[in-house]
Length: 89
Image (cartoon, rainbow, N blue to C red):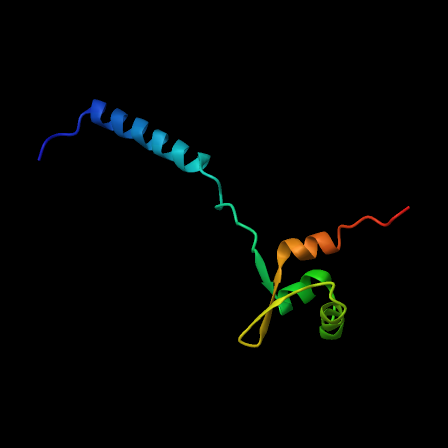
């Protein structure tokens, strides 16, 4: 085993600071990609509406979900555009 020199300790200290700087510069969490499709429960929670209100939107044709294995899936963009229309003047 070789002796540790003052220069070895200085190099270790320098490398620790470099590694810490790299870690601190990374974003805290990776960017979350918004969902393209939402299930009924997510839509109801997002819009604060009941089962009946969501069913009414489907019946009136205001939303056009895709039904897969008995579950409705709604396109997120469609919901955003549905509720972002400005009233006519």
